[in-house]
Image 1 (cartoon, chains in turn blue, yellow):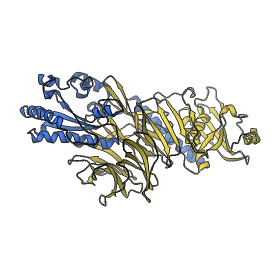
Image 2 (cartoon, rainbow over the protein chains, first blue to last red):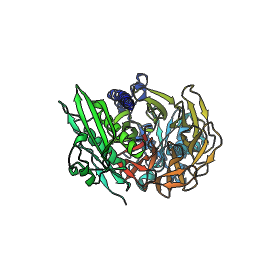
Image 3 (cartoon, rainbow over the protein chains, first blue to last red):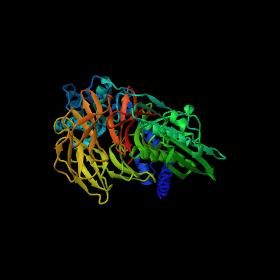
Image 4 (cartoon, rainbow over the protein chains, first blue to last red):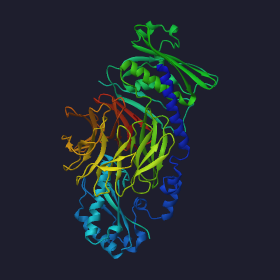
Length: 191
Length: 427
């Protein structure tokens, strides 16, 4: 009797397993309705990225000016608009004094260009738990956003997304990298 | 005292290589002194086209890896009997063996008849014997099942060898990242990618029946929570509100999902009824509330909150209300995971600059730090409650590790991916 149960259990698990491997061939998520829009399909997303030519994280990785495509002032090293990353202290979402002028410059630009939208990506370093870091990243982005709103930027111009520790700017595992990863990136949206 | 034992699985597995299996080695870095000596004699194999999986090798590896057994290497075996009559028990007694396993795998029209017997070497008696039929593709699972049967018989604890684990991997090529949600056998074999994205994937959580996984995906450049059915690959988006959609945790009856949403301004714990799709807000603090986890009896939810200044664990009724702080030692306690018996919780415990896995006894509130890494995270209990799987890192290499509740037994699971994290042991 016990043997029968064993065989049954094996048969069930076999059914589940073979189901999995069939799906795998179809590049994981094949819910037709979602797939096209979702961008989870590697190929389509890759195309999108190359085509847009303006993705904050991509260009940031090469140390360039990620918002250069928006206007010449964003790649002028003497203009605070060329700075698009705000850094934070450990476990803190308080904006440090050094970055107040940078945020003010972006706020002024956005007030002057009410049609321009910016995504504020909040990030954290790798220490501690991942979902807590998502929350911390959001708090950081919100501190920057609230400073901008005080300076007149409209709600509709600002979008917040937190990636926590999931998209590090620096791949090291030391204090130097962690400092670079506790940040908010301002990613202007193309026209 | 600890003994070091290495089991290299790579290269020894013959012809059966699944399309996307993760190369993995397992090292037992610390084991218990009372490990039981057991000999798993190579099974006799008969088949015209060969037997694609060395079943006895998989059983040997499972038992050895558990830390509860010390297996005898093949070279030291005095003979390779495959029938009870052929066993000279005295020879095995002389080698200090308590138990031995023999068996046969016989091919029959593309199916395999697998039989094994477990003996008490001192009494010269059979303890257990089974015969089962398996297809070629299921031989590894059959082997894990044999390990479970032997383990339970000899330790009294349920085996976890035929369970599975889900985890996230990341790889980079130039500026392009690929994030994968994978599911493998408990020993890392048969890894299958169930979701893949250039944007991050996070927080896999098994449904209580083991058929579905809830997870967070940033594929649309914002967070959403999905539930995917493993057998069909079908998935449903269950939360896509403005802001954070994260930290899914199933209720024990599988009917509800606790999660973190920041749609009302700051991160709070909500419960989504998966049947009616109604959403109930459980916490209303002005601080961060996240990482809910359901107690196995369904009565309460433990979560992380920084309402006291630093992240600490709190407990509340699963209906909301009656919120109480649980942790007081250490400046950082987060990402709780309940033991299957509901008596203890594992957590990420930060003290100074180190983040380690700690276990709290809920009755006594005593906290015991059981790992010694610098950035250990994402604890997940084995379904029998004997081990905790977690993610760790040494230098640039991320890996998964399993530790016994007292911290005395440690296994390191090294996959071919250097960025592997968020392990979740299937129910």
